[in-house]
Amino acid sequence: MTEELTVVGCGPGHPDWVLPAARLAVGRCRVVVGSARLASLFPEFPGRIGSPDGSAAQLDLALELHAAGERVALLVSGDTAVCSLASKAVACLGEKRCRLIPGISSVQLALARVGRTRAVCTATLHAPDRLDWNPAEVRRLGGLAVLLGRPGLHPQLGRIRDELGAGWRTSIARDMALETESVTTWDGGEIDTSGLAIALFLREGEGP
Image (tube, rainbow, N blue to C red; front, top):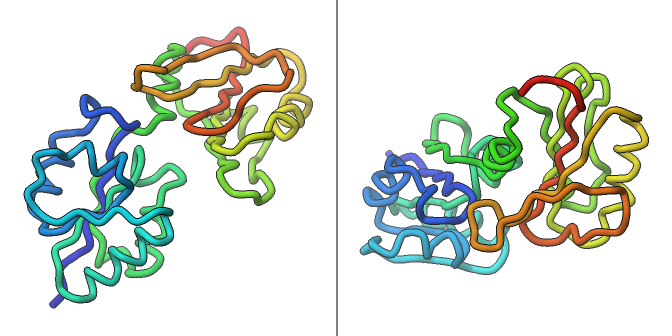
């Protein structure tokens, strides 16, 4: 019987945030598949590394090697639950044929940087699709984190601000855990939304 495909959450992209459980899981595999950036977090790995460009190519390679009977670790950014490539792996193979090793997400780290301890809604603008979010649920929880990653998204963020109305603060968190990390307040003007960026909408006047 083919072994499970191991899907490893690698945290926000710095070696200090790769969990010991992730290193142990990778060490038990013969092949690692993921981006060159994520593969570089495991310099001690003695096996074979595949790092094709694009998440779709990485998933295809991992599935191909897994079907051939290889012990494969598929590296994914952050967690295995927050807008992750892990969901596509599970959709292809099913829950019982995937072993998920969660990591620390950039959203978790960004919220920690601003002192937020309670859950928020999470959405993504990684793809050109319409943003799927529930304003009523965001108001109930008092927070929304939007994963960005493409330029020119400030109009969509502006529409979220308008929908939420007064009493909310908006921050842009970039490059969490990296040397270029920053968290800045957004005033609604044009801003760079490319790369490893997250927009945080948090209601003012609430506790953490």
